[in-house]
Length: 200
Length: 200
Image 1 (cartoon, rainbow over the protein chains, first blue to last red):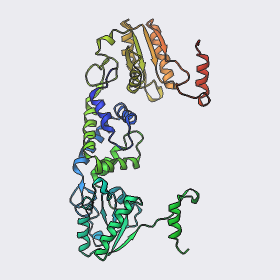
Image 2: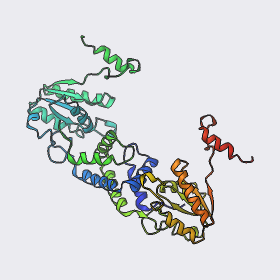
Image 3: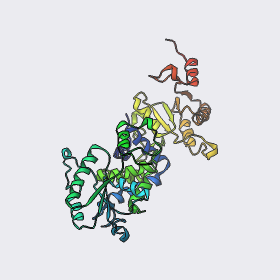
Image 4: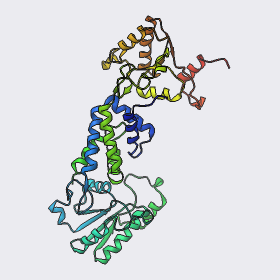
């Protein structure tokens, strides 16, 4: 069988690093770019190269940033806030920012505790987090970790840390998602919604 | 609301050139690469840059190639073949090559006739195709265009061209796909399968 040009084969292989892209979609993507949008493909190549080398982490909250401090950590109004929201990833932080409801500071773990994979408190920057609490400027830590086993375990660990520093801890409410239908909601969520019911 | 770092926003925007990638998947892809696979992301960036500028078209069959002739057109055994298969795209050519059943030459249209979009015979290289037929080395042209309206219209046009040069024309068989269930096959395909029935 004839072979694809090496550059094309390399492109198809390289495209598979993208989440959810298998051999067939990678091939489709490569052909489509070559046939219809070489300019867009070249732009994507340049954007990838620039982003992979140019994006680091904020020194203070650990989110993705191009300079030492991210746009939130360099905003003086937000730095005066006494509320700190702990999230698992930069994507989670973005989701909370997009609600427009939170005006405080963040701490981005960039992962969850996972002793089996060798991810301990240091890998999540929790020593840095403890140093932040020691400054005594934070009154409330909001735990916005995923409602999964790893997320919950990490939340417990952080809650204990906060108690050592006498800082109050809250967590995101669990219950029915807006627009969800009761009939299709899983039992555990429904149990949480029941036990966390509020006066109407 | 706080803004994403410009390089990250540019990456998310650029990822949307990929087929089937909307704003949410683009965001997920960007975050995943930054969090877990910067090396793979950088490699993809380099592969895209190299492929978009380094891949051209074969001078003879119009498929993607890095040099003047593709690997099939530079294979002397295949160049002696008197059968030529006409396909709509390089992806279609690859699909036929992967069957391992065809040992002849190809001609890749890189599109179909579409007068409304201004795609005429010249854009599909059909003058080049006619010159190939004029050399009188091709005995049989296999039409392997898509069984769609555009594909059929293009096939008709090419079939007429072949007749002018006294070249015999065949087309891929239409009928039941292997593994398909009769109950779920559309009526037109079933009609083709009936009218094209073969002795058992």
